[in-house]
Amino acid sequence: MAGSAASERWVLKRTLQHPTCEVMAASYSADGTRIVSASLDNIVRIWDASTGACLQTLVGHENGVFSAAFSAESTAIVSASADKTVRVWDASTGACVKVLRGHKESVVSATFSPSGRGVVSASSDKTVRVWDAATGACVQTIMGHAGEVSAAIYNPNGTRIVSASEDKTLKQWDASTGACLQTLNGHKKGVMAAIYNPNGTRIVSASEDKTVRVWDASTGACVQTLRGHSKDVNWASYNHDGTRVVSASADKTVRIWDASTGACVQTLKGHSQDVNWASYNHDGTNIVSASNDTAVCVWARASPSSGAGAAGPSSSNAKRNFEEAHVDAKKQKLGTSAAAAAAAAAQTPDPPSSHLQLVHRIVKILRKGAKVAESDEERTTISATIAALIQRKLDATKVAAFVDSLPEDLANMTDDDAFAGAVAVCYGLGIDM
Image (cartoon, rainbow, N blue to C red; front, side, top):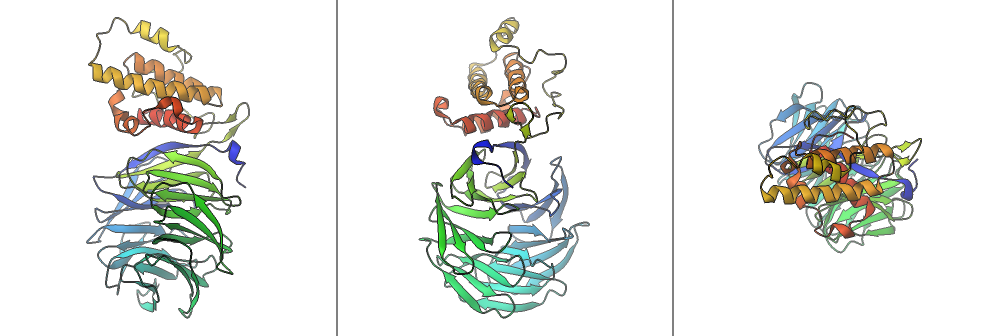
């Protein structure tokens, strides 16, 4: 079960950097050990979720890849591309085992059925297609939308399909016959995504009208409208038990919502451009987001600690990586004040003023984050980072882009933003919390 909104805190854990290309989608394997991403350089990538290492690059698409997802057993991957094809890959070897051809325009979404035997795809040609994953044969072409279809996915038992379209509607279809069961109206602009909750009783949708909507899957009635994003919402999905919704927006943020109340639990800031996708891992402890800024961000839910509330994204006994800073945490007094550190560094010639300004700005973020940290462990790590920065043992330019994306008025940053910013700075400098 998800904890209360008041006790829930998410922080940036790591960034999976792609070459200079937009990342359109990223999602976890069923066991949470791997992440698959789709990007506009025509490549599907598989990553180690624990280390962030790129394990494989799947090459074969002839144009940008819009989506990629594992099968329920994590043995296969399906991808959708602007080259008008869907590809099925062996998740172990990276070999392409099937190319599904039939769409007349870009394929923007493809997912497996719960059994893994079927694939459903959505296309700019205004159709949804159902495929036999083993043979690659198209078994159904579903028509009915008046605009491009943005997404299509099965319900948990595989009996229904929900699709989202630029025609402002969602539609539910009988997965066996292709008959339209319902049209869900309410969004004021194109619908970018739609997905069922884990028990199939609700559907969440994301729209260019800046809202997320929750629908009763039985009646088709809209039961909630989640407002808060300032630009198009590109994706939305549920966590493992249906208690949370995560959304990705062109406003550069990811939002976490309480699925029962519709309240925004937290806004995750870290991307510098549109966020195209966000989804949970298998147990709801991590979120992965994909953005036009060429990065996939991995966010971790802070775990309760025995002493002081929410801990950092890693366990309380996690080793800190101070190698890049040449700081041995065991030998340093982690509580060294910024003033003492500055005095110790007084004999070192000043670097260029622009660098000093950057360091000053980063230190302000870290200090504000330290004030709202809820555990001694978090505070000592942040304090050590401040000391190392002022002693000029860290390269502040490594986090320049991130710092530039933060609000100028740091005094008005929320506590959550300040803490998330401080942790992101630590990770950006190679210091693991």
